Image 1 (cartoon, rainbow, N blue to C red):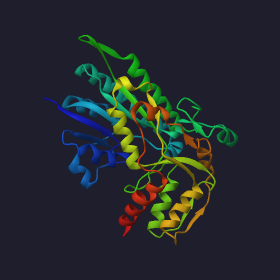
Image 2: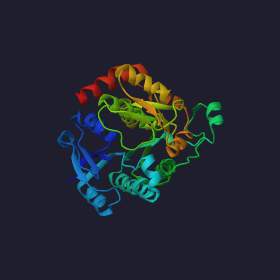
Image 3: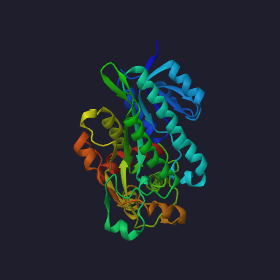
Image 4: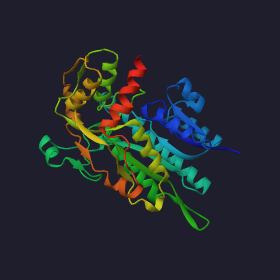
Length: 336
């Protein structure tokens, strides 16, 4: 008999680390993880880990033969900055990898006669604002506005949102009296800040990079201009959003893709927050043109009213609590 599992791809990354701990804390969950990297020692005690690529079709076939996959949290991706340098690799991982997993989920849904939930973390990079004037005129955007991404990563994420929507609406099979279809749900995240994992190449990582450098007594030059504003969220809230959306009754959901966010602030304001905790920190600004241009196409805030109305989304960490209760004490402890 195949074991019923929750599958997390890209589990060795920032979101995966927190998600494994949360899911494993519920005793009835068996967590299966897949990543090209090994898990940490603590993570290995909480999950069954397969070291491999989502592009490895024989590996995916083996997983299907050994496990009944109930829910997929598809976190594996090449992030925005790296994707700009390796666009073909980004397309393979971010699009073709997602397509293969959607096929897996479709087949599992038909075999089980019950839908597999496919939870997909999308990104603020799915937006593309044409210029700074437009950003100022439209500071808070809804899910369907300004979907003109200018990066490979953003284009990949937006296309995968469309792929998931297509699969959930068009691939179904009659099972007894009810149609069975894949249950795809996507969350569009702002920049995520974690106290427990190091930044890994995202274009919004200047926020956590400032903190980690300050805690280690290292100088840091921010790669965007001080006045640039972006939305952010603490990592525990990001995990809450994924779990809350996964738990929401399907009949309550009127959308497939949902914005979530917590607070927006400029790079200079992040610096101010860091200096309050680390007064001797050496933080300057040395904008990188390529990454600056990417940031300039992303909105200053995201309208998450649909998530709040349809599945009760509310962030627990506003700016003050995020820094004072989550980031600063945990990062200080990490480097003591």
